[in-house]
Amino acid sequence: MIGAVLEPNFDLPVLLIDDDAMVRDVVAQYLESFGFTKVHQLGDPQKALKYLNDPLNPIGLIISDWEMPGVNGLTLLKAVRNHPVRKRVPFVMITSQRSMERFKITQAAQMRVSSYLVKPFRAETLKTKIWEILGWDAIEKNKPA
Amino acid sequence: MSESAAKKIESKFSDGISESPQSAYQPNLRILVVDDEPEILKSYSDILNPDAQDSNVVALRSTRSKAATKVSEAVPVTEFEVIAVDSFDKAITAVEEGVKAGRPFSLGFFDVMLGEGPDGYDLVKQIGAVDPKMYAVFVTAYNDRSIDSIQDFLGSDKTQKWDYLNKPFSHGEILQKARSFTRLYNLTEEKLLKDKQLEEVRRQLLESEKLSSVAAVARGVSHEFGNLLMQIMGKADLCLVTDNQEKMKEGFEVILNATQRANSILERFKDLSNPHAKYEPRQNFYVHEVIDEALLLMEHKIRTSELKVSRIRTDHVQIEGYKTAMLQVIVNLTLNAIHAMGDRGQIDFTVSDLGLEAEIRVRDYGPGIKEESLKKVLEPFYTTKGSEGTGLGLPICQEIIEVDHRGIFRVQNHGVKGLEVVMQIPKVTEV
Image (cartoon, rainbow over all chains, first blue to last red; front, side):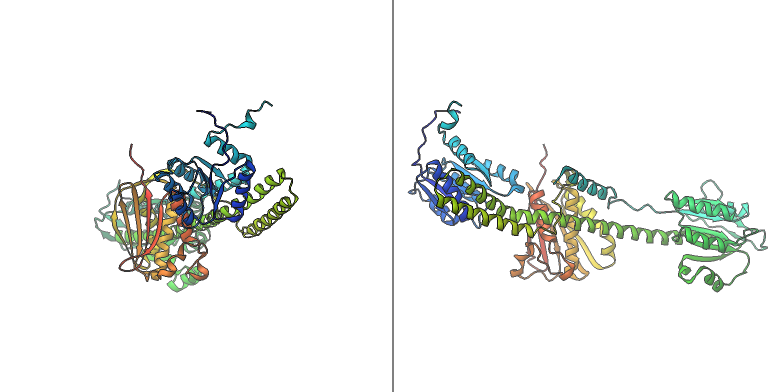
C-alpha cells in the first residue's frame, strides 16, 4: 500500500444512497458491523444531490447505487467531482447491470470513481474496498496466520 | 449457458449469414435448342451466339419447308449460352444435368418432329416435370396440331410457359423470343430471390428480436435481480456473524421474501429461450452502405408500392459495430415507416457527419405519433400494429444502437409532418 497507513476512524461520516430500501438496509448493516457510527441514509437521489451540494453537511465517504430514477449514481459522482469542497471525497459506486458493466466502469473511471462494486457482494468485499480507498490499516489481514 | 449451446447459436447465425441476403441475382441466359437437323441447330447458334459467325444473313431453310426467309438485321445480341442437341434423349439429359448442376435453362426452342418416337410436345411435357420453370418455344413446319390441342396436351396451367413459331423462322423472331422469354424468366426469378432474401432478413430480425428481447428484458430486471441477490447475500452474511436471535430471524425472512420475488421474476422468462449471442465480429463500416443494402433488399417492396425514397444527405461516415445488426435496424425502421404510411408516401434518409458522431435520420410522412404515446414506443411490448407487431422492434433498435454501438436513439415527430427516428453513433476517428 502506498503512503502512510492510518488507524480506522469509525466516526467518519458516511453518506449511503440507494433507492431500494432493502438493499440500503443491508449495506447500512454491513457498515454498522464494520464499526461505522455515522451513516446517513438517503433513498431519494434528488435529496442526495441537495444534501451533498450543501457544504455544511459532513461527508467523509459516499456509497451510492448507480441505477436510480431521475438522478443516477453517475450524476451524483459528477456533482461530487465538480464540487469545490467535496471533490476529493471517496466515492464507492454500486451497480447491478452487468450488461453495461464495461461501459459503466469506463464512464465511472473517467469521473474518478474510487471504487466500483457489482451487486451482490459480501460484507468483506465492501470492507476491503473501503479500507483500501481510505488507506486504513487492514488489521485482520496483517495479523500473522 | 453451456459452451456448446453458445456454439450452436453462433453457428446457427453464421449459417444464416452465409446465405447472405446481399447476394446479387445472376441472370440465367442458358438456352436449349432441340432439332434433329444439324443445319437448323447451326442457324440457332448463329442467331443467338453470333460472335464467331456471320450473323448478318441467316437463311433458314427447313428441308421440310419450301419457303425460305432472308433476314438482315444488325441487332446487338445478348450473350446467350446455347446448348444444341439433336434428340429427345439428349435434351432430357441436358435439362437434368443443368438442374443438377444448379445451372438450369431459362428457355428452349423445340422442333416438333424429332424423327421416330416421341415428338417435341412430349419432350416439353417431360421437361416440365424436371424443370417447371423453363420456358418453351415450339418450332415446326407443320400445323399438325392446333394451339388448343397443345394446350390440352400440356395443361392449361402451363399456358404462359410456351409459345409457338412456324418454320421457316426469321432471325428476328428467334432473337426476340429468346430475349423476351429469358427476360421474363429472369424477372420472375429475381423477384423470387429478392422476396426470399427479404424474408431471410425478416427472419433474422425476428430471431434477433427474440434474442435481443431477452437482453432487453434481462437488462430491465437485472437491476431487480442484483438487488434481490444483494438482500439474500447481505442478510446471510449478517446472520452468519450475529448472536442476536431477533436479527437473525428478521434476516431469514428477508432472504425468503427475496427468493420468492426472484422466482416470480423467473416465471416471466419461461418462454424466452436463449440469451443474445453476438453472431458477427465488430467491424468498421460506412453508414450509408448499410442504408444502400437495406434499400436494395426492400427494392421490390418499395417498387410495388407508391413509395418514394429520398436520400436527403449522404455523408460518408464510418462507425464501428455490427453491420448486420445495423442493417436490421434500418430495415425495421423502413418497414415501420411503410407501415405507418399505408404503402404510400415518402421516406427520407439522412446521414450527416456531426464531427464526433454520425447521425442517421429516418423520416416518414405518415401521421406521426401522439405526444403522449411517443413515450411508450420505446417500451417493450408496446405496439400499434395489433397482432402483426411484437412491440419489440423499436426497443431492439434502441438496444442495438445504444448498447452495441454506444449511440443515442430518439423517436420524435418531425416538425412538419411524420415521424422521425434520430440515431447518433460515435464515429471511427481516423488515426
